[in-house]
Image (tube, rainbow, N blue to C red; front, side):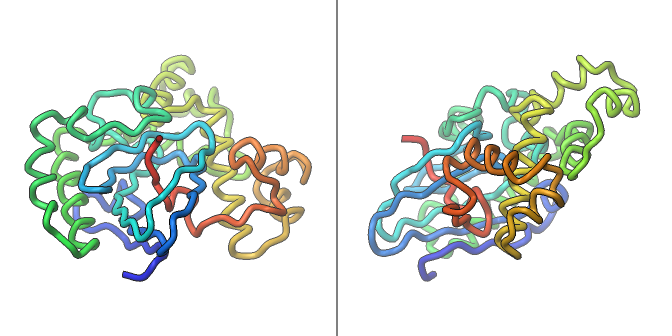
Amino acid sequence: MAAGYEERAPQGALRSWSPCVWVRRAPGAAELARVVPDGCTDLLWRRGRLEVAGPDTGHRDVPLDPGELIVGVRLRPGAARPLLGDLPATEVADAQPGLRDLWGEAALPLSASIAAERDPWRIGAALTAALGDRCRANAPDEVAVAVADALDRPRPPAIGSLAWELGYSERHLRRRVRAATGYGPKTLEQILRFRRALAAADEAPGWGRIAAEQGYADQAHLSRQVRRWSGATPRSLRPDPRPRASAAPRA
């Protein structure tokens, strides 16, 4: 595979809970990869090690080795239970533990099965199958996923309204969303809006239009939020096709 980023739709039981399986190969020279929050959680294969990339609450620049290959399976906001089990997503926020720290000895067969594999998409298929198998005993929290979907709109409903519609107290729903996604509802809403803004800019630049379409008060509001989550101005930002494409490890 040449240097760059590519993603494919997952197969099997995980397809309802994962937007993609992805592969990234760094160029021939070392580089710094900018990673920004996207609300997702990933299972990674990198440098011969299985790792969990928890939800980010800020941007970071991480060095990649020349030609380095990373394979990942991304889980949508609120759908981290196949990977985390009963561990709250807040416990892995801004962290990248080894999978064995979470799964114990159960992580060893998966690691052994892909250790000698050279085809990155075969590795991705093995990671997808392993997470799909875990969906039986660790199904995603469908309520939290539904809330994340509802918040991923230019003008989302208030969390109190969502709680009433779903039949829960607002306090209970806030705790549930935080445990499943790693964020409180308001922070999750902001991150999802930021993600939509990046995707819109990649397809058709025009920050004033994007601000209006994605629910920002005005372009200045968008600029402040882009700075908060990416550390860059909208003018200087050159996003990857997916904000989390690098999925690089914490130093």
